[in-house]
Image (cartoon, rainbow, N blue to C red):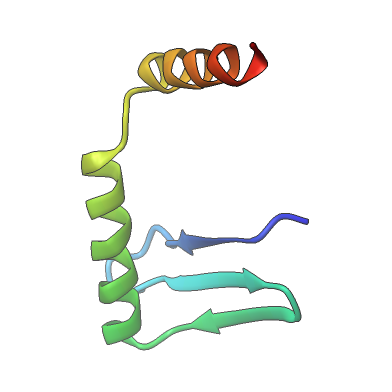
Length: 69
């Protein structure tokens, strides 16, 4: 089972976008400017602290080797 969220934006400057959140029993669309801003800030925070793709692969390999022994 996969859950997630995403921010969808349209190319028009006046369109604030919509946040789509999928959860166990359904999905929710958030459309208010405050909700969109809050989720955008959270996403940007996660991106700023995330590993680069090559670093993520290396970390997963190290953990897999550690637990595979």
